[in-house]
Image: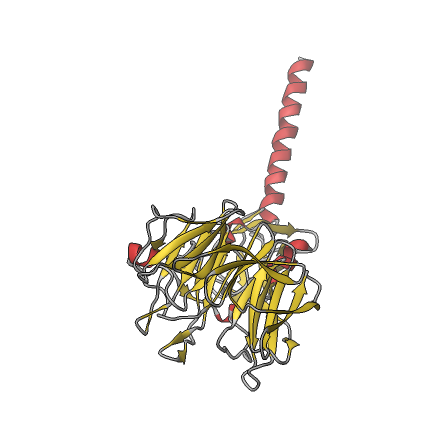
Amino acid sequence: MRHILAITLFFAILLTSCVQSDVVLKSSPHIKTFTFKSHKEVPGIENIQFTVDTINCLIYNEDSVSYGYSLSKLLPYITYTGSPKEIKVNNVSWSTQDSIDFSQPVSMYILSQNQKNEATYTITVNQHSVNPDEIIWKEPTVINSNASSFKVATTTQAIYVFVCNPQATNYQYIVYSNYGSGWSQEVSFESEYEISSIATLQNHIFAINQTGTLLLQFDQNLWTTVGTLTEGTMTTLLGNLQNTLWIAGKNTNNEAILLSYDGNQIQQNTQSILPNQFALEGATTLQTPYGLYLIGGEQDGVAQNCIISSDNGYYWTNILNQTGKYGITPCYEPICAYYDHSIFVMNGFNNGQVITDNYVSNNNGYSWSLIDSYQQQPSTFSFQKGACAAVLNDNLYLFNTQASNQKALEVWEGRIRRVDFIRK
């Protein structure tokens, strides 16, 4: 008999506890969880985790929503510890089907079913206040005030600028370098050669002379001859792949040829396949981790929109013709750079006029779009003939002569914000 009474008492207490718990649950006005479902206007917001602080009645996210997306029409998904009698957002009655403007902190009032308990939550959806993809530019630095011409070469350690001023019999060169901490003058020297194209191989700087017959290496403040071409001419140093320096040229019949230099001798690659637009006059070379590029150029006085590339040095293809996507304005002598895993093509000329549209490709040149305003050149940048770009230590450098003084060579240094966010 005692056992029966004990069991009966146990279940009575348990039932009473459950009833009381249910009453407390129903009378609680608090928020249990707060999330967002996927939204096409704010990609990834469904993955943002929100903290619900029931003690201080605060809801907020630690990981910020990406910059630039509108938070004005979002529909939250909320669960409660009880079933609310009434909900107000910013003092206005709210239905769970109504979107809310979260561009500013939101006040959410909750009234319990028994109308005896209430709570007011402050909901904050944190968003990046600055654009992490914006390129921030420093004021330009004039590194030489009497530059008749210049060439830029980049190694893994530094950027080198060869500034030339022709003298009576020779060419006077001043070499500037930047190892990532500012510009300094390295050396000055005279040479009988003027360089027409420049590139690097295994951190050594090479050039071809103005006649296109000598391959030169910069060593001990001088250009020394490392290879010669007796038939035809070398026109452009394309860059290096597989420990080989690739060179565009023309034979005695004025036909395009492909040459290579392996550190010992120059060889013509007679088995290579070259498109008709290979090594156009005025095409800009570009080296990326995925291959070599020739961008733009001029053929019979007409600007082209070619994007010619090779991933092995031997075989070259005009990507735009192959895909049928003509993504850049026909141009010659554009500024090209591989920066932030993208190819940038800026300015250039068409029929002697400066191109104002600038393009970017995020898939190695197969398709193109206009560069967003926050990644354009500085507003005071004025494109001039010979302008070029280089990249070192996550910094983008633009080399350009001043519009008001064509001999003043200035350098613009830009850096994408996201790099510093990651490092912090």
